[in-house]
Length: 269
Image (tube, rainbow, N blue to C red):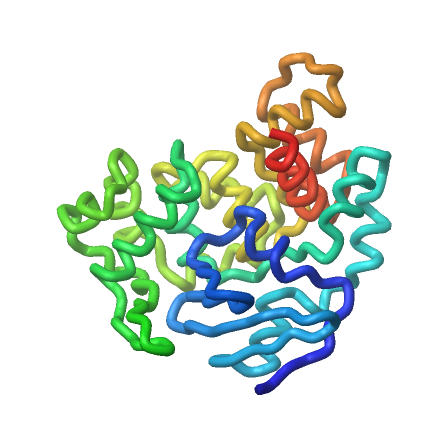
């Protein structure tokens, strides 16, 4: 069984912090579907065991090459984020496939995590390729252009999101998504928001979780509540001002601060 030594890494917090959805727990193993790869990981003490991928992919996917102590030092600005870092130390920002990330967060609009997971699984069964994994049937994620049947998209319980998924399928290419990495954060965000159905929050999720823009700071209802409580004395603040605050206050790794605070908000609910 291949394994690597890991430091400053918490597999459970990383996988369950809302940044990806096609992950399934079986005992102490996690089955992860990442585009056309399906692989398995588990953590024991300071080791990460894996099957179905190589060491290079594992290191890249879980951002194990990031300067983690430097990141935490830069975002640890006060006792609130300090408490979240201590509680969820080892949480990493996964480097997802941009196309799968875009579709996943289009499905997330006004939906809870079980609903998102269900829609993505039905889409994968309908448009992806079937594969057998340890006796369990799983499916790869469909490629750009494959979500070409609107009625079938609707049957994936996507509701009002179906039209946005079909439009994204028709408009978005892999080249377009990869080209965003060459832009500044504001430019890349604007380009994503030109796609119907993508607003500030979804754009920031795509930028943070798949395109390397670690300064992105998505605002959802959980983040709105905890930021207003911890940093604005429970005053009502617009999402735009909260997002601007996060980027300015936490700096180039604001997205990491966002994930720590998001986990703290969910735990406190």
